[in-house]
Image (cartoon, rainbow, N blue to C red; front, side, top):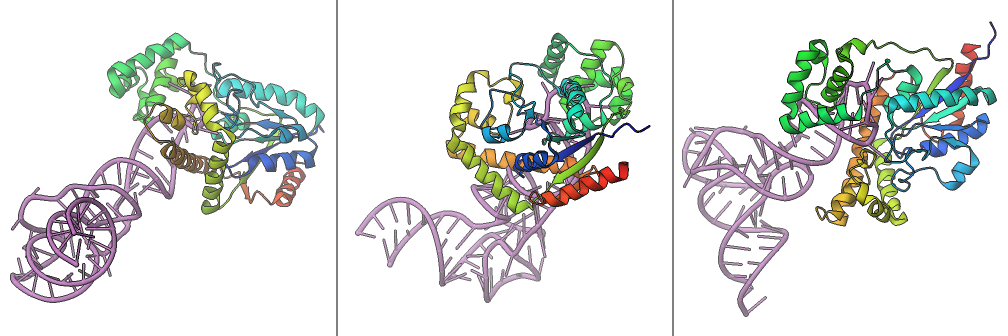
Length: 306
RNA sequence: GGUACCAUAGCUCAGCUGGUAGAGCAACGGACUGAAAAUCCGUGUGUCCUUGGUUCGAUCCCGAGUGGUACCA
């Protein structure tokens, strides 16, 4: 068999490390396009606070999944993954390389390795479970999951309402324990993932974060947030850069306090991202300026596959 | 210049008139299967301002010094 192997170049890294710039340069070299894997750049209502690629960047290289959804839409990892795989089918006809870039670890992993098949749950089930949490608190969720799925309960993070809610939702929707769906199977992919991590030392990253937040404020982040204030309860707006400004608009923080909090929360987000990426030993780490090094690495990986 | 109050973790502060200290936030480490920029878990990192004294023993009591804050001049 001599079917040509396709390569998905995964470009990951913490927020503000310089993924967008690197991705554009790399996509140009590879004569291909960019698929975004950023769970907040999906939404067209958010522009400044999500550091969406600039008009020039978007013009230089075609991008996909940038602002293709509304914050009012329901969108999740599974739907995104299906969308991405479908898009790959057509894009890999034009090029054997594709650049996937973003900072959402779960989404990147889902594209590369897949998720277990799970049936849809409904909005009403979700609200029903939310109601349990609101009225009975964490223990209400714990006792229900312990009863309907002791196996999951034994290994789950039972302090985390999100995990328990999800498990109980699936149980209500299917009548089966959540754990029975969790096979942990890797889905087959008809492309090879080449994982590249972008890294900067902590001090430098913090400085870039602070500068970027200041820049966002100059670009009018407050006005953007103000325009979205009425929709602040949308999940997509539970996002660094917006939630803190909503607190300011609510009179809970001064503007300076809100800006400081955006910087802090962004740092903490970057830290969580690094924790996620670090555990995946397949990543090869590069300084964002070392495009040459990345290209050599890609050639190596392609060579091994030949 | 005088008087009063304060000085404890990176920050804001607790600490029973004596037995070498703790909260929140930050920081650091971790988890993560359809809400993921979300959500959750773990860890105290310290010349208790300096210096004399009292005491078996001082973050704590007394004296002096230094720095700060407030009020009075």
